[in-house]
Length: 292
Image (tube, rainbow, N blue to C red; front, side, top):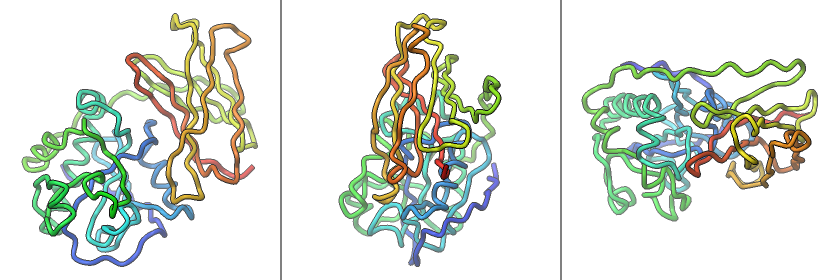
């Protein structure tokens, strides 16, 4: 299907040359219901990073940050010869999780690859690392570009690029849009949600302050003794990398259901709150931090 491209321009780009690579990345965060929009807004800041498009589970829509003729800042020495797609998700996700929980996102990627292939004449074939780092033309992972491509490991060994390329070659049909749960209402707070299966937690930002976060978990209702919530900071002083910032454990005891975590506003441009689920995977909600 034809994609709707929401133009969300980033100032972080440079000149491009003849494009030969279409590169798949995982954001390592931004996995909430509006993750692609959140990532695109992040790229609009003075963060030294960007990508051509940001993609999430919102079927039929991508957020376009850098035109295909330019070089986005996402894979170091290969920026000028690549067009790049940032995928809401983690390199640690399994093949089954991608195909089961992120099918709309994968179909969006397939449609984007098909459109870019047609516009740029890049074949829909998966390249090996040596081909990607040489003169090959096709699709590759960020990890295929090695140290000259910033030495990252995304989108991970479980990413189902074979399925995505088959869809890209044959065209895709709309996939069912997963329902978005309605956040519980709490006056004065900006709420977000983490959704591991049918369970969820809510995270509230304190009204008017953005250098600390309060959050709560009704762990007792879920039959859990405690829940582990991990804070990941989007660092503003290292090109937009994501770094673990700390963990808190929220118990079913009423006194432990709510916690406050302090952030360093000098280094945190944004933050993700992650909830450890069953099996041991992390579901995430992400926020950009304003200035309080």
